[in-house]
Length: 252
Ligand SMILES: CNc1ncnc2c1ncn2[C@@H]1O[C@H](COP(=O)(O)OP(=O)(O)OP(=O)(O)O)[C@@H](O)[C@H]1O
Image (cartoon, rainbow, N blue to C red; front, side):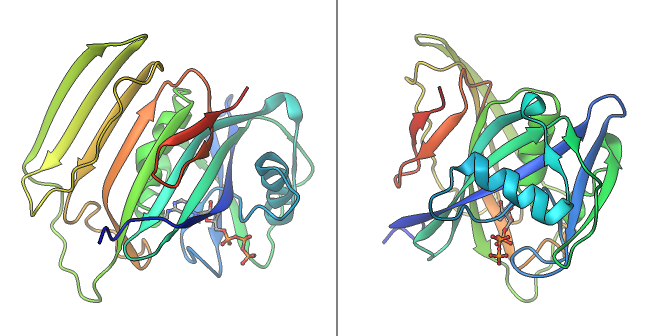
């Protein structure tokens, strides 16, 4: 039985507020709930009757006290978080907000703080953030990612950095150019993740497998990401993920 088989999904949002001029990003320190004690963007569950965009704007107001201006608000990508032996996936709609109105304020759930792009506290963030946030900051969006998590063993000894990395890149010509990069550690049994290279969308796709992906991250929560797959530079942001982990539809 596939431990990552999904039977349903929850729809979540994540908003990254960016000051392009100052090269800073607004993150929130999550004080409680899922992802407590980690820095992250602002977001949460989309409520019944809401679109993901409406849910994202509402959560930004609730958690940071600000209203994103429509002209600076864009969808950056879509992420699917899968957890071992959990049939409910988290379909996460990621947005960028380049301008806002209002006064940033702390609430009972989040403590907002600006960070220079160079000082983003990746070691105190969800492990997947370091994969897709640099893509978002380099404005290489739209992207689509699948991130696979296992429950972190209570006692885990972690090496200082990834070892035995091997990288291969291949470019295939389809309707548009598709480049595929595969990064695999020479670790335990790698899990194979297929990349649909026939999709008529320009993308760079990465698959990574590791037994211990982000060593030295004791604060990154009770889960450890052991594999991810990401496609970037899509022609349009993905709108919905099918339960088999593929893109069901695109925005526009
Ligand atoms: C697994 N890897 C992950 N990497 C990066 N971000 C992740 C994440 N997993 C969840 N997230 C984000 O964490 C927030 C949880 O939101 P969460 O507090 O549960 O929602 P909401 O505010 O509706 O909760 P309450 O109903 O108040 O409990 C939400 O933005 C969601 O996108």
